[in-house]
Amino acid sequence: MAPRSGIGLKHPAVLSIVLLASLVPYVADATLGEPASTVATDAQSLKASVKSSPQTNYRIDEIALPSGTTLREFSTPGGPVFAVAWSGPAIPDLKQTLGGYFDSFVAGAKASRTGHHHLQISGDKFVMQSSGHMRAFTGRAYLPQAVPAGVSVDELH
Image 1 (tube, rainbow, N blue to C red):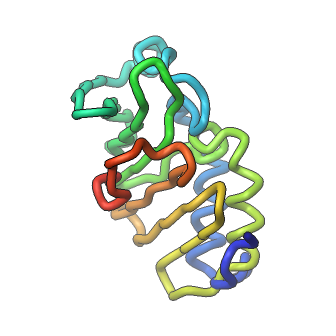
Image 2 (tube, rainbow, N blue to C red):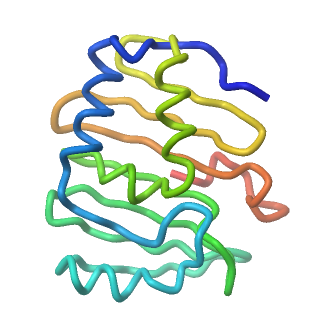
């Protein structure tokens, strides 16, 4: 399924998100769709703090980035990161955070037209929602097919 159409890449909000994503030097792993095993090592190299919260059938690793942004990574026990969410004054490095799904984000951002400060990309394999303005960004990306049974996507924030 192709991403829904929405804000074009020339739109200031989308252009800001893409530009900030490419300029932000803070790298945060694990990457969407990849094993969650590297979270602690990467957070240590970033001098970021990590707090893990086990849920019923998934785990949330919350990483406080040096920028002041909080990045939450959702993974199944021994499995992949099936969702990421962020909130704070800066957008995390989306190329690193989205990994192999970054190209889907770029393509979806070019085709998207949903609002002035909002980006919505919806597909069978990749969903991303991002909104905000300077110093107040929020967003999430998830893999619908990888969300564990019984988990509502509304929990992924």
